[in-house]
Length: 161
Figure 1 (cartoon, helix red, strand yellow):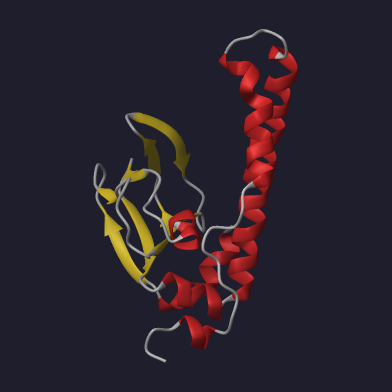
Figure 2 (cartoon, rainbow, N blue to C red; figure 1 turned 180 degrees about the horizontal axis):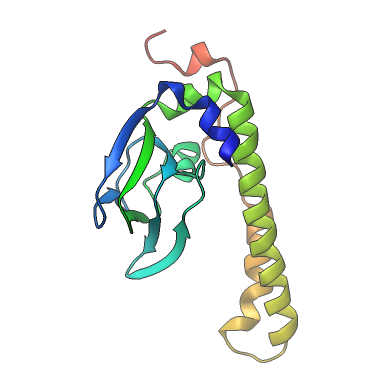
């Protein structure tokens, strides 16, 4: 993910003290963030679900792409430096290479999740408990309709036009 750092010329460089939250679950910023150095924790509810330590790692991308609130809180686990890209949608339109990196990252995450869910489905098939519903979850992931995605030119989506 270090390659992303080459594209971060338009971002605001921010120093974040350990213990400081960068973004909050449920808030909506429209910003994309890239770790330059340090260590960040991804927190869902009260649980730390991931640690971000690789320079060039991005976060906030799901909120930007889905135009939804952030799904987790991100907090500095150590003093850290990040790039904050204010108009993430415009940045991603202008930087297709970064958009492709994010698409690959999200595809990798989805592959891991579906592989894990398929394994659970096989392990708990016929048990009659809540884990037997994994097959239904997998099917619903595949059958999800796109949410409010409207193809068109950048000009059409810009309210100033």
